[in-house]
Image 1 (cartoon, helix red, strand yellow):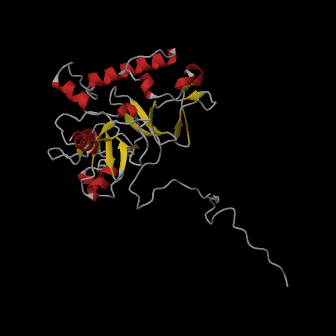
Image 2 (cartoon, helix red, strand yellow; image 1 turned 45 degrees about the horizontal axis):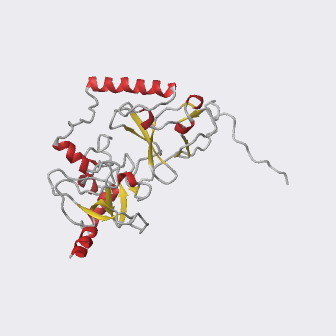
Image 3 (cartoon, one colour; image 1 turned 90 degrees about the vertical axis):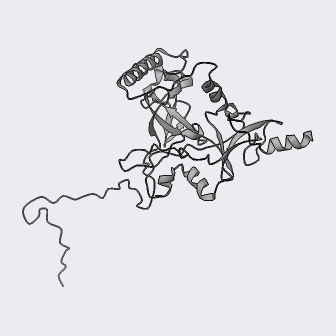
Length: 300
């Protein structure tokens, strides 16, 4: 018996062209049944105060942080301002490399200048020039500052900038006022939806109440301290799910719509978020909470 070796594929095709071996490549794909289109952890956005570009990252304890979108030489940045990103998570320290990231709050031209290095001071001036160009072109409008003593100023003093929301038996710290929380869904023009969670012209979904300043899990807090909470416990379950997903009523009916941003909810910690605790109800809300009812019963 004569052994016949296996035939090897010819080096060229029948038409004389060379055979090219295609290597299998693993590409990043999205599940067809997934509602999110977020492929990276650093979400691009614009600062509400100066209009410049920023990137949102999550820290190790899931707290969001705003970073400048470009890296800077680590030798010219103070050690207290150095950040680095590893596996999509931001850490407040240098990683030993020659480059680092800086928080946007350090170089934001809309905030008071702090004594920093000349490198950060020059970056802050360039961002201020960019903000002025956007204002002159009409592409950015800074937040109006009402005069001192006006009704708008008194209302802003009572209106929490980052309110605490009671949602699905968990207390969250919102990133912006309740009436400014924006939908995260994608529109047909592949842009983020501009509709707020609160439908304009309708009654508020929740109610402002005064409750003990503790986390929903029963975490300890300073005694005899109360805080203002936007309570959504009285709304239907489907409405609370809509708020948790951070979708407007229109996109809540279409769950297949993609998401262009991460929900702004941050688990509330009474010790770490003490600066956001408010003890006075917003203007026009007088609904007593459990702490008020207990105090009234004690007085009787």
